Amino acid sequence: MNKHPEYLLNNISGPKDLKKLSIPEMEELAKEIRTLILEKDAAEGGHLGPDLGIVEATIAYHYVFDAPKDKIVWDVSHQTYPHKMLTGRALAWIDPDHYEDVTPYTNPDESPYDYYAVGHTSTSIALATGMAKARDLMGRHENIMALIGDGSMTGGLAYEGLNNAVIEKHNIVVVVNDNQMSIDENVGGLVTALKKLRDSNGETKENPFTAMGFDYRYVADGNDVKSMIDAFKAVKDVDHPILLHINTLKGKGYEPAIDNEEAHHWVMPFDLKTDKTTVPAPEGPTANSVAMDVMKKHIENGEKIMAIDAAIPGVFGLDEIKNKYPENYHDVGIAEQESVAFAAGMAKEGAVPVLFENSTFLQRAFDQLSHDVAANDLPVVMMVAGGGMSGTSKTHLGIFDQVMISNLPNWIYLAPTTLAEEKDMMEWAIKQRKHPVAIKMPTKRVPAGKDVSRDYSEIKYDIKPGNDVAVLALGDMYEMLGKEVAKKLGASLVNPISANILDTASLDKLADENKVIVTLEDNILDGGFGEKVASYLGDKDVKVLNYGQKRVYTDQVPLKDILKDNRMTVDQIVEDVKNA
Image (cartoon, rainbow, N blue to C red):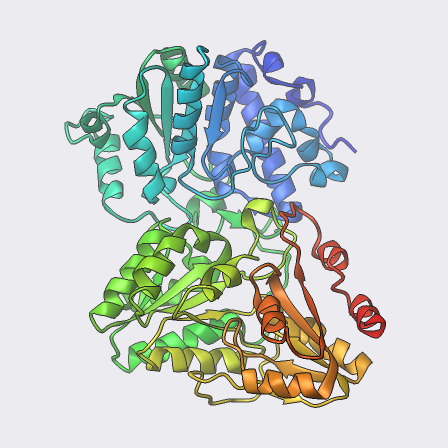
């Protein structure tokens, strides 16, 4: 059902239709786009502030340039709802029956106007430099543009991209969309540099972009369609590198998103009248609240401990630490490499760094996990959120953290099955000063559990005995699948505690006493926990069945479908065991 048959947007099947509109019609179109973003996000959640702020720049881009021949790379691409609406995909906002038709990030499988599947930050300029060089090599002359938010400018790859973009011999335009925000407040010296440029209307001599060699241009109102059209016309077909700095308002058109930018960067479904979420908050303690309680206890004890994150305090509920104990909190910006190396430096000097990382973003810091932390065997503590199978975009899957961390020397990767275990693991990790320790925070609902006190320097499995079959259910899988599978099979149920350190004595005993051993993990199988168990038991007379996600990128596939496709329902696992 088309909710707005009167909208101008109904007549725009692509940028060619947009080019027929007058400035007042484009301003009306901007209002329509904002209304649709708000309606859809209210219904099912999504990125809000970034998309509301980029509407006029998007309209102006498609009015001036000739996509898809001219190419724009959207950094993170969480601000491309307006772009999608103007490139033939408006039905996914106009008609609620089609809300699921498009993915939340740019997607070349979806449209020729999208060039990459992009969901992480700081990559746009580097990608655009490669595209520009290929264009030159092939003798073509199309426009290449990277649009990057100032939050994304805190990531190291952005600077590597700038360093190479400025020596491009022909056309490349970097648009810095300066809305003075990241996911959270922006941090670092870049904040100062951009403010000086804004305050001087782009005239200050303290200009890092001209110092590098860019032809620098400034637009004071990046939310004015005519100003943006004029700015884009001025840089179209120019035969050298240009940096276009535009000042925009994140959340424009929706007052609550302007007043509280962090809370409205990405939203759960909400009531447009009250701005209150319609998703009930979890009752009782959570994985986040347990971690925060541990941090507060150690801070208040006067210990030299620091919570470190990379621009996502809201993911962990770190705002209380940030506001109440600023000396014990450090946000490095969208720069996971910096966060891990920063933690290594702190650990080397005797402080206790506690890193809060998201599984999907942690891959950006793989070199630091290995080279700076593991190779130096430094006692960094790392809490990993979002590590598990989910129905999200293929750019945001949390199924690789175990493979990254578990296969590096010296790292101990622990996986709690209850909140009490999470607390105990964190307490132990903070106290021990021998090795780096990561803890896979529960992503599914887990019970509070009974208080425990263990020494995790030697892993000893918790085993509830059964007959003929043993089910090793790691972390979230214990509650989610392990209990029910073990019950249906009359099997032993095992909490393996660690994703990478095996209790070989227990495995030997389980292999002797059972015909089948089942491993369950919330991660990809290749290089994961199950394969380690199977490899160790390779010469034993026991059948080992490993369950986890296949090595594929799923994209907006519901979790229940992923589980079924990987034979990870209770009935499928029970059937496989009986057949074995």
